[in-house]
Every structure is written in structure tokens, then in C-alpha cells.
Amino acid sequence: METLQKKYGLWTATSMVVGVVIGSGVFFKADDVLKMTNGNIYIALVAWILGAMAMVFGALVVSEFAQRIEKANGIVDYYERAYGKRMGYLMGWFNGILYYSPLSAILAWISATYTLVLFNVPQGDNSNATWVIAFIYIAIIYIMNYFAPVLAGKLQVTTTVIKLIPLGLIAIVGTIFGLRNGVLLEGFIGGAKEASNHMGSLSSAVVSTAFAFDGWISAVTINNEIKDAKKNLPRALVIGAIIVLIVYVSYFLGIVGVLGASTIIELGDNAVNVASKALFGGPAGVLLSLFVVISCLGTLNGLIIACIRMPFSLAIRGQGPMPKLLSKVNKRTQMPTYSVIYSFALSCIYLFIWYGSLNNLFGRYIAIDEIPIVLIYGFYILLHIWYMIHFRDLKPIRRYIIPILAIFGSSIIVYGGITNPSIGFYLIISITIILFGLLFYGEQNV
Image (tube, rainbow, N blue to C red):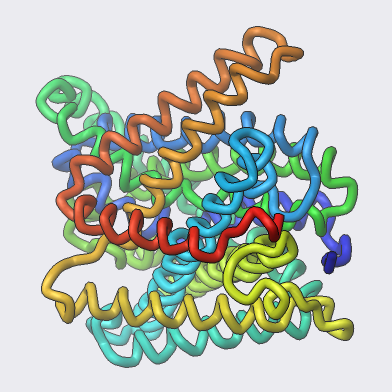
């Protein structure tokens, strides 16, 4: 069986958690969460915290699996252990076709959008230039991951550190600014008084935060490439999840303190750019906006790292389309050549689907930005339940309380997703694709 070299350490694994999660979502979804809560800062903050529950406690559950199992691609390994090889295969198929690939396309688009915002290009998110730049970003990062995978790992660490700079500055300076001018205190007092009137929108807001918190599971796709994975991967999951929670909540408070809820809603995705310039002036604001672009590209890099590993992890098991071809590893680059090509093609296909969705080419909006995340959290619930039943050696808090909290957080996201009007169409498509994947599964190959 072909294998990939152990080339990543604890900080690369941690940066996969932090770097993939902290990308565009915190910038891209802050205004959406406020819109869904009608500008109520109190309820919006509750939504961010509830959204984090699924990530933090889910990471604690998965970390226990990571301590016990180390094969090739953690998520496939864990579902194989829990529900058998067919279920493990279907999870790998779902992640590769319906989860990482569409998210990589969306992150390329977001990276391109913020690139044009950085250069003050109007209507950047709708221009043809956005889509050209998005394609270029995808191509460059796939090429780098193929020819220089170690460099891609170092880039993941570097971009993770860089992206924490603007978030940290806005969080600290913005919160102080907001406390001094009374925006935060007034927003919380007023929001708490009106909380009962906006609780109905809470679940939808939590789904929006789920996009921002999603991606932490990507670290397990490189579990067999991490040195001393049974120790380092669980540490990376827990450390990364805690860092993300602290950074997100403090950033949200900071940007609200600077601009206020109504202004953030009005500015949309450009809010971080305006907040940076308001706090630090023109040149510093431009520099911080550059950090935002780097942040998004770091997330895109992490997703592409995961994209490449998904078809390879199935192929080395003799599963999926063309397993003999997709499992071949180039001896010089130590990367699976045809898995890279296959994943690149999928990312490009989803980039076109996202283009068509935003430009109404298909007659309807296709929510490939949120619905795959809702579905994946539904699958996580199955893993959490199995964990409680079978890990009998754990103490009660770790065996029951942690997975129950993870299930609670995941259930809120699933419930919110059910209320999305796009879920029916997308769910039918997803089930069809999952069933189609069974054509490439055979017990004789296992």
C-alpha cells in the first residue's frame, strides 16, 4: 500500500485547525449573523458561542479517536471503526465530493473578492476578474502542494500566525474603543432586554457561524503524515479549537465596538476594511486588509491539503474511482499525482457551480457554502453517539458530558439547516451523489 511520508509536526497540525477555521468566515459572516439577529449584539454573541460548542466539544471527542487510531485519513478511519468499512467509505466519499471541494471553491472566490477590495476595485465580488483570480489562486496552491508539500505545510503555519495579527489588533483596540464610547455596553443592555423577541432567529444565526467555525476536522486528513500523531494530533485539535473560540469572540466584540451593529450590516464584507482604517488610519488599514487576504489564502491552502488527501485515502483502500491510478505516489514529490489532478478538477467544477449559483444560471441559489456543513454535523452526531456507547474506559465527564455537549452544538446547526429553504433541493442532490458513490465500493477491494 502506498503511503505518504511523516513530514508534519505539532504546529503544522495545529495550524491546520486554526488556519483552516480562521479564514474568511469571521470576516464574511459577521454581518450575516447580525442581520439574522436583527442587529441584536447580545443574541449574535450567543450565536457565536453556541456555534463554537460543536467545534470545541467535537474536537475533544475526535481527539480521543485520534489517540487510539492512526491509519490514513482520520475521519475515514474513525467511521470504519464505529460503523464498518462501508460507512467509512461513504464518509470519505462525502467529504471528498460534497464537502472539501465546494468549500475550497468558495474560499478561492472569497480570497479573490477581498483581493479586489484591497485594491479598491468596486463590485469585486460580482466582476469577471473575481472569478479569474479565484481560478488562479486554486491553480497556484494545487501546484505548490504537489511540487512542494513541505513548503505548503510551512505556509500553513506562517499564514496562521499572520492572520492572527489583524484579528488580535481589532479585538483588543476595538473592544477598548467600544467600551469607551459606550457602544458595547449599550448594545448588550438593549440586546438583553429585547432577546426574547429575537430568539427565533438564533438557530439560523448559529448555522452562519458554523461556516466560520468549520474546517477544524481537516487536521485529521494528514494524521498519517504527522510525526507522533497519536500525541500531536489530539493536542492540535484541542489547542486549535480553544484558540479559535477566543479569537472569534474577541474579534466580534472588537469590530462591533468600532462600527456598531447597524454599520456592519450596511457595509457587509467590507466592514473589516473600514474598521481597520478607522482604528489605525489609511496605510495601517491597507496593511491589515492585506493580512485578511493572506488569512483567506491560508484557509484555502488548508482546504486544498485536505482535498488532495480524500481521494487518495479511499484509493489506497482499493475504493473510489480508479483506485490504482489515484493511489500512485510520485517518488520525487512524495505526492499522489492523479489525486491532485482529480481534486483540482473537482474544485474547478464547484467554482463554476458557485458562479452559476450567484449569477442565477441554474434558476435557483445552491447553498454549497452552508448545507454541506449542516450535513457533516449530522454525521458527527452518529460518531458522538458511538463514542458514548463504546469508550467504556473513560470517566463519566469525558464519556458522557463532552459528547452530549458536542451533540447539542451539532443539533442546533442541523436544526438551523433544516429551516434553510435551499436544503430540500441540495439534500436530494447530495443523497443522489452519495448513492452514486456506492458504484465504486466493493467488498472485494477492502
